[in-house]
Image (cartoon, rainbow, N blue to C red; front, side, top):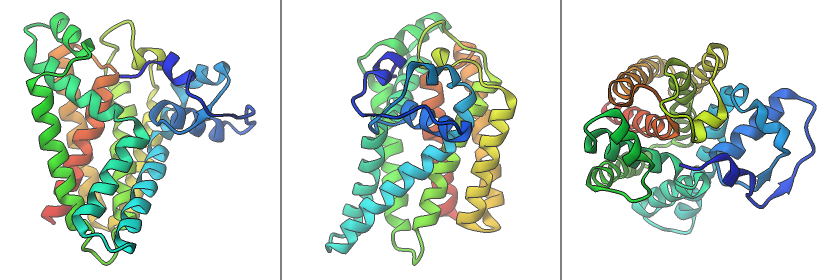
Amino acid sequence: MFNKSRIRDKVGTTLLAPQNDLFKDTLVALSLLTRLPIKLDDDAYAYSARAAWAYPLVGVVTGLLACIAAQVALWIGLPLWCAATFALATGIIVTGAMHEDGLGDCADGFWGGWDPAMRLKIMKDSQIGTYGVLALLVTMGLRFGVIWEMLRWDSWVLPLIAIHVASRAVMPAVMTMLPHARDTGLSKSVGRVNANSAQIAASIGAVALGMGFGLFGLALVLVAIITTLVCVRLARAKIGGQTGDVCGASQQICEVALLLAVLAS
């Protein structure tokens, strides 16, 4: 996973410290979770934990960019599978694959280590193992396949954005429900997220699902809740807490779960 020093060193436009806390929180969230050229003063990162409520808003940006990429592919006459690839690749590029990296690290560590200490050590290793490769192959394949099918719909833009938003709404909940599993890393540098931030993020995710899927959005909210609880239970059992990798993996797992639920409907 990325650490805060790397995020701070990103080249971009230096923005004046905004007076509006909501705007500041959104910029901090975008800086933490994407590779967009946003550079803030170091003081802004002191509010990283507070800004966790804005993680779903990052999904608005990533989802919109993914939809634009897919639509451009369709406009120039490329087939649906190419448009789905464009949408998937855009999301990966914009985020720097940090969530996919978290999923791969968790798969390697959770099932490659015999105890919490060994699992955390494996998760910190920059090399990817068999479990990580297989996890990414399966989830990438499922995401690609469902997006391909969604592009056949008359209206697919808002639903796809809603899934981007809702899948990022689970991360603050994971950070609230679990203690830090190690004393270093991105999640530790962000700090402990309070329940209010997690509740706001969850509310944004729920509203997004309602806007994207109507009444069926209620069922998808339940899917997201169950997925979050499963991720929390698994992380607690395997490493006794959460890390940035766990948060990234929870986003990926929730996205896949929501996509599959949509396809099954």
